[in-house]
Image (cartoon, rainbow, N blue to C red; front, side, top):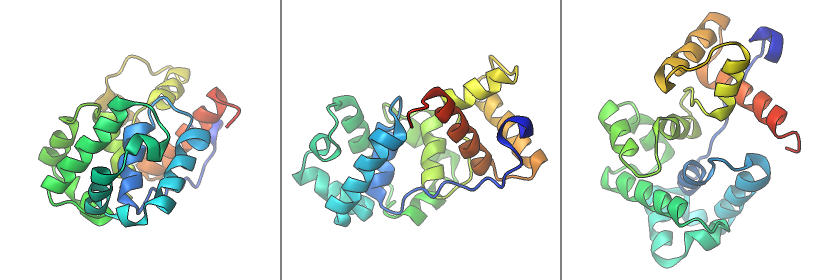
Length: 193
């Protein structure tokens, strides 16, 4: 780890305070170039929909406006995921970043989120990072980094534990180490970023 990405410090990603951005980031980011495709759309969403900073405000916008147009994405599946996450959070009385941060402490809440079509274990952990938690969300970049180190074939939870233990051994926050690895591998895989 140190030989490839250095000693740090590795800072936690800032995430979002705008809940519409949190929900859309989680729903739209997979298999997309983050810096050039997702992040600009999220910044535009925050600017265009300032009243969507809470989950209820975002839900109100979804009633009157087309999310596919707002995000400039023609993906009915991803739009449906954003709507379903929103509906779940409203039903659970989760309205702000702090609400979601605390709500994710409970395994039954995490399971309810995973029951949403399009939301897997990585998405749940990624959402946690978006609201200031320090978690390891194992994606293709983290798997590739582990494979380069000779760690292959582990299920999600086991590879996540390897990263968490590595972070602890090196004195880093799990989310900070995860983000450093993600940045390193995403740059290596997508040098145009």
